[in-house]
Image 1: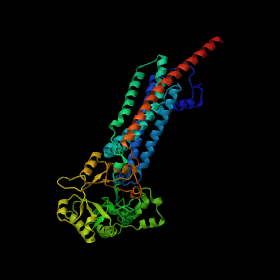
Image 2: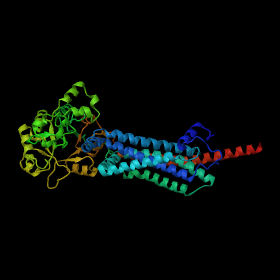
Image 3: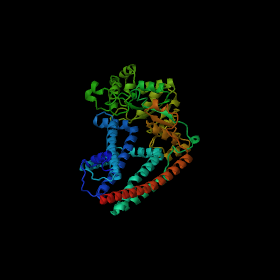
Image 4: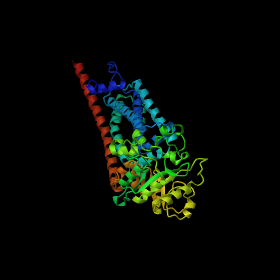
Length: 533
């Protein structure tokens, strides 16, 4: 009856790319060793593509940085996250469907003859994932730390999902094992699969012993919500490092503005992140022959002629332009490059603290040796209150500290020795132990750049004092971490999940054994009836 039913026949057509059944094939020959090996490879490819899909999703927090880097190298702007996620989703969908179809064929005792086209596609899936991992390791190695953080944050849930998946897999494995036993065709494959399955299942059962997630804590121990620092202002609502971006930051209620500062050819400190002006200005239209010059090789008079907003409407870097009003879009078109002094005056007016990276000038620049003094002069001329300046540059820090200007000293990842630190500015992928070590010493910890709610929740539970973000307007509305679980509750969930899974696996093997016995008895009755006739 199974062989004649509609859905198993459809599965056979999908798997073998043929709808013809060989009526001369003896019962049980469908479970060839080679066919079963290909089923194992299908499961393996599914697991690989599933992991790659999770990796691709974790890249979302830093994808804007990737887009910027590609533009700097190839002068091509596009949202690469769409391509990465689409490719990963296609690979996962294909392997998932093929795995489910193979399981259906196993349960229905139909031939496991995988078509060569599927074999090629499976190999192609594996090659694409391997190339993706190699590319990530060579060009974007720090993202592996992001993947590790994602595992730390979500492993309790991934563990439960993995246990459920492995428990369901026991039905297929049990059916295959008992059928091969009853046919007297046992080979080394069956005796290899069962121990491997038991070992992997046992490893999953004990995995929580090695889980170290900051979100496993009592709610009473939850640290205060991290304060937000606007990365280049509010770049999801306005062009980065512009007056409009600063204004949107103020309207969002954020108290710290983060920026990047360099010096013009005539000694004016101004806001600019990239070393070139191509990405965030219309330099190609105004000065086409100088479009690839370093931004510090222009005089301030030339810089004032550039538009710093139109690119935002054209490139739509955060896919937020559609949310802007017509008035906002008109305001964006009028944005110019601001000076550091102008921003500091507005910051003082609105009681906004300012932290900035100060870029070292290229060789041959007239102010290469005293760009620190020019920056300090701009700060003094702005009359901003000293306590609003968060001094981040490491170059000549000791000299700046000796001036006793009243700035708050913020230390980056380098050159922390021989200083008494009160605050550090670190990438978000530093270890959990390091964050806790800083906090135990009563050192303020800022993590950059955090845009995704899950990563913000991780930083919150880890004890970060503040985070630098592009998504001020989104993260400010988060009132609690995405999840916090009491360790005692998780212990109960872990034990219950493991016990139920173990009982389910035993039940699957028992039921499959009984079902096989009933099928054999039914087959014997049919044979006796035929002989009588």
